Every structure is written in structure tokens, then in C-alpha cells.
Image (cartoon, rainbow over all chains, first blue to last red; front, side, top):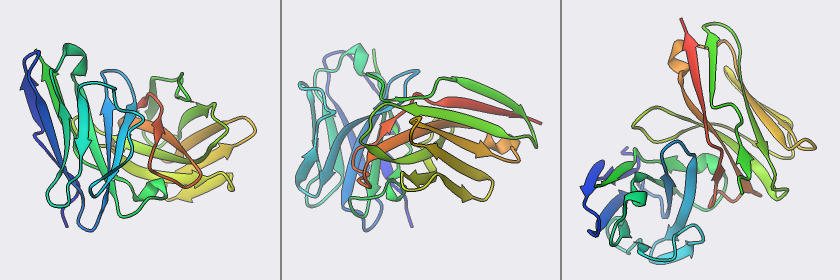
Length: 115
Length: 113
């Protein structure tokens, strides 16, 4: 029973390139969340998606960042024209429904380094 | 505006003793609180949660206490074990919606053998 799968685990991009992070939720989960952890900080909410819908993107930077969760396939967090400040750990989480936090399960994270 | 604060970046305790991790919040709309444990290079793992209608929740060695009037919660681990060494994050959300968790900065717990 696989957990939340994220790939790549580590990604290095030069400034100005695009980064794509993928997340496959746990089986049976239709709610996906993305969080970002900058160095020496806690996790910060970015976006909450259900299949084909963005429910809450209030934590997403206004520019360069986008997320999708298509009907088929994983959720994608896309960062265009990356800058050094985008270097962080990006965590995906999933739940079977909107609701109590103890049903939210996190993936292992994707570490983005911008050089 | 840090709505959830963990004022101690680190805590060191002896094996077998009690570990107490603290968390304060400012947003009155929060009424569901969670603790996550995180090892380096891994994702957070859910530990225990508490709703604002309770003041205590216990699960094995882990107990969470909530003082709603003081907007303060704490996680007690007893007895502490070396395997408990990790970063502990406090998180909060409004009502029982888990869609948006607000995390504290984390406390690094080290349990010495």
C-alpha cells in the first residue's frame, strides 16, 4: 500500500529554468496539498487541489508558480524561471477527503536547488 | 505574521525522562491542532492531534495538552527514547478542515542515551 510518492527527490536547476515536481497521492485519495519548507523554517501551505480543480491557492506566489491535478496522472507543481529563493523542500500531502488533519499524509519531499 | 510559534528551536533530554515541547498560536479561528515528527530528508509523520473541545489527548507515550484561553499547547513524550530524536512541528487549522495547516517553525528534540 504505497504512500504519497514524490519525484524527483532531488532536482538541480539553473536560474531561469523550469522545475516540475510530481506527486502521486495515496491510493484512494483525491485531495492533494503542496507545502514548501524554506531553510530553517516551518512548512508553509501553498495550494490545495482536488481532481481537476484548484480549491485553495492562497499560499501560492502570484507569479511563476502553478499547480494542477489532472483527471489522470499525478499532481504537478510547476515553477517557471526559477530563482535562488525557490531553493527549498517541497512536500506533497494527500487525504481521502477534506477534513481532519490526521488523515493528511505527507510524501518524502522534493528538494529543489537553484544554482 | 507567525500565527503558530514554537519558541524553542531545540531541546535536549536524557533517555527515560519527559520531553515537553511547547507551541503558541494567535489565531482564534484555529480549533484543531496537530503534532508532526520529521526526520532529515523525510516527510512529516503525523503523531497526535487535539480538537479545541478537549484539553488533553493521549496516545501511548504521547500526550497533547491544550490551554485554549492561553492559546497554548504542549506535547509530552514520556519516557523519551533516543529514536524520538527528530524535529517536531506543531500545526493548526480552523475547525476540522485539514485543507490548510499552519505550521510552527519546529523544535529539534535530541534524546541522549
